[in-house]
Image (cartoon, rainbow, N blue to C red; front, top):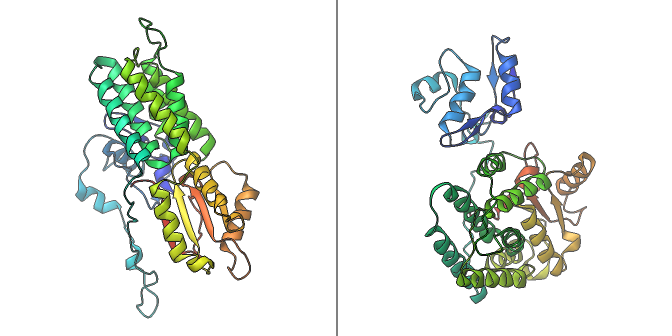
Length: 348
C-alpha cells in the first residue's frame, strides 16, 4: 500500500481527544491486508502526539500504538526525511535555492484600529471574569475565533462580530439556549482540513453562532463596546488597514516600481475566504483588475486549471501578476514557474 499526502489519513488531533475521520477508518480496514506500507507526506505531524501515533500505528502496528507518548528511537526506524537542502544534481550542485523568510513589519496602527483592539480586549476581559463551569469553553473559543478574524482583515471581523451580536441573549433574565455537546462537535470539525472554503466559512459561522448563545445578558458597558466594535468594523471593512498598507508598499516596491509592472509574480495566501475577498477589493480599487487572479477551495476543476495555466504562463504573454489564494486551494499545486515570492497574510 502506497499513500501519498498520508497526513490526510491521520485522525484529527486535540490535546485530549482524537477522532477518526472517514479516511482513517477506510485505511484502517484496508491496511491490514497489505504487508508492505509506504506513507508519503511533507507534513507528517500536526502537533498532536495522539494523532501522530495513530498514523504510525497504521504504518507499523507492531512498533506503535496510539497514545500520548511516542519513542523517538522507534520513529527513526520507520521514517526517512528528505529535505530540499539534501537534493543535488549529478555534479553535486543544490537543486533548490535556499528559502528566506522575511517578516513584513506593520507600521503604527491607525486610531480606529487601536480602538478595535482595545474595545475587544475590554469586552473579552469583562465577559471572562463572569464565566464559570461549562460556559467557559464556548465563550473562550468564541473570543479565539473573533481575535483571529481581527488579525486577519476588517471584512472578516465585521462579518463575524455581526454573527456574534445576532446570537446573544436579548432579554435580561432570559436563559441562554446553548448546546455544549453541539459546540464541541462544531469546534472539532472547524479545526479539520477543508477543501471547500464556503463550507469551512459556514462551519466557523455555525461555531460562533452556537457559542454566542452561552453569553448571558450583557451589561450596558458591554453592549456599548459591542456597538463600537461593530461600527468600527463596518467603517473599515473595505479600507486598507496598516497590514494591507504594508503589503501594498511591498508590491509597489518589488512588483510595480514607479507604477510599472515587472515580470515578478507573488502568491498571497490567506486562511479565510472573507479576507481573500477583502484583498481582492482593495486591489480592484487600486485599478489592478487585469493584474490579479484568485484561487480558493470549492472552485470547479476547469476553473482551477484556467487559473493555474494563467499564473504558470510566461509574464511576457499574460498580464496576470498576483495570485490570491486560500490554504484550501494550495495543496498539490505547483505554481512556481514564474513565482519566487510567497506572502502569508495571516499572523503566523
